[in-house]
Amino acid sequence: KREINYLRISITDRCNLRCVYCMSDEGIQFLSHDQVLSYEEILRMVRVSTLGGIRKVRLTGGEPLVRKDFIPFLERLSGIHELDEITLTTNGVLLEEFAEEIRNCGICRLNISLDSLKAERFHGITRRDCFERTMAGIRAAERVGFDPIKINVVAMRGANDDELVDFARLTLEKPYHIRFIEFMPIGETNGWREEKFISTEEI
Figure 1 (cartoon, one colour):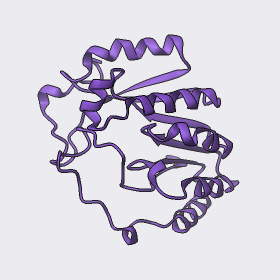
Figure 2: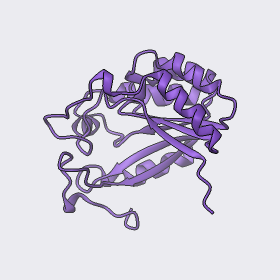
Figure 3: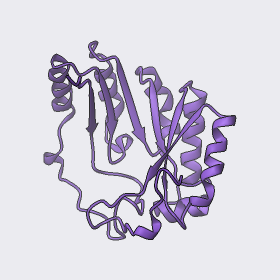
Figure 4: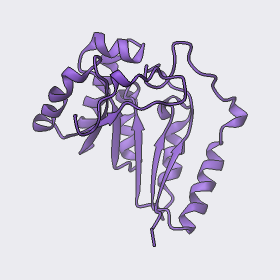
């Protein structure tokens, strides 16, 4: 019998980046606010889910930190005593501002997306000039005591494959866990091509 104790919740479809592996140049049609669960509805869903054995929750987006009043919601979520673990996936752009508050809410682990260690290349992949803000967010997370910090890297041939060893080397110097993720087709919007794909085995 398989035990299901983990719930992943996307709290928004909005994002402050436009990563090439996530959407097309034209972007996507975002949901209207009345189509997205309210914080009250999310909290109720989590409370009901704990009755069925859910003990771990991961918050994702889009980018969770762009949603208004995220920290007060996080405080209320962390007050659900049946939960053993709340984790957060973020692109790090707003993390410098919120890292300490997130930590104070009892969040035990962060996953941060970072696809290049080079500012110009980061700009090309994300279509936004936010490299320094993302790096500042990672440093802030380290400063307030997140350990380990998990960094997600989407590996793409011809885009960042020459940096994979550099990312791996960071684990020798920092409290980082690097997770290389295969570039996968998502509908018809993310420009997936077989020649860009790198398998986990090759990585």
